[in-house]
Image 1 (cartoon, rainbow, N blue to C red):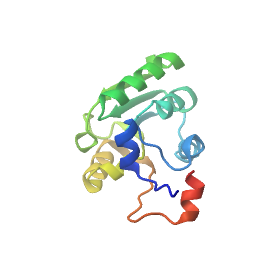
Image 2: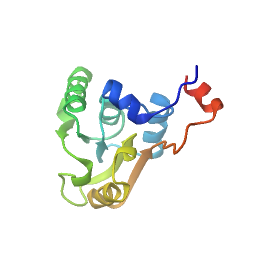
Image 3: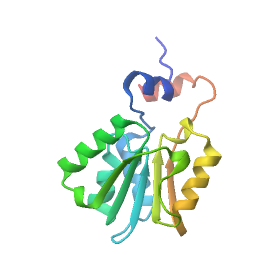
Amino acid sequence: MTHVFSPSGIWQRTGVTEHLGGINATQRLLAMCGARGSQRALDIGCGSGYTVCRLASDYVAQVSALDISRRGVEDTAKRVVKAGVGERVGVVQADAHRLPFRPSLFDIVVAESVLIFCDVQQVLGEMARVLQPGGVLGVNELTLLQPPPERLNTLLR
């Protein structure tokens, strides 16, 4: 049986997206962003809260977590409390097309498996608006316009 990777299919079945590379890819992305001590970061599409907790515990001083779904916000809020990083994390339910933050607020903005569901130009514009000059945008996305080759299906299984 052939399994076709479909981000929207995963979203429809579970309410959560999964990005290629999983936790290892997230860890590499955060390291590549060069996050450090006193910075402020924004995680767009916070989902289960894993990335937010990693940012708050291992990398930066303050993290804002944003998700359009109530479930993502609730899951993140629970994980933040469990991880003991609540004093450094704010969680908000909002749309990435209209970020509820002032311009130039963040040193780092990250998004994983988010842009596929968005008007990319509009969301990238919003990300740029809330990033400080010289800030870092870290994105982990995979978009397939046709069914993937069997070799990729095997890898994804």
